[in-house]
Image (cartoon, rainbow, N blue to C red):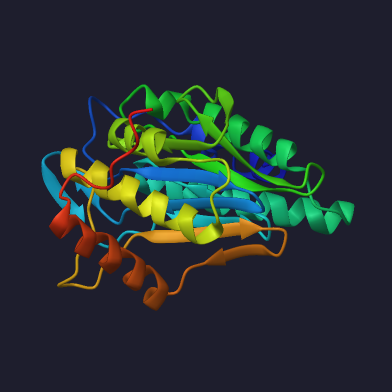
Length: 256
């Protein structure tokens, strides 16, 4: 960031010339995360919208930030992907210069600063609101951080969601989440939440069995970042879809 600011400051997100009026651009939608003993799961649907149109059916919204953390993007897709690439580069540069990785708190704070630098664009409707998750080596547990458009950072406990379908995804996880989930149960939980979000939010895409487009599901543990393979995510999505044929509204939580 310092190098870019010295040589080409106009390329920094906060220094771009603001567009006139409201700009229509593809937007990524729903991202969800959940912790479990031993790690954290971060997942996202695959749909990008532009107004009332589907701009892309298979967009990628979840990216590794480094070996032990990941970012899920919601908001203006183009700016979000550019921000993630710059974030990845900064973390790699820090590790090479310092000879050690930045703490998870430090990574979350750095991402907060980058989001704040995009505030001018956000005021024009081009907001980027990511969800950041990773394995904290010091505390030996998975952690989740959410943000607002001003870069305000909050740590979420248990589960979190962002994007247009987040209200429905969060409601789904609120009823199904338990602190003693296994890794397999946590991945099932986030897919159930994305399914519920797609059920009520037109901007969120559910599993597309015909086109073989399934949610991106990633797991971060003390062994590092891992993205579920297509076969794994396919099996998980198909299992959830098959159970929804019997219970369209999803699994039931106990009343007491």
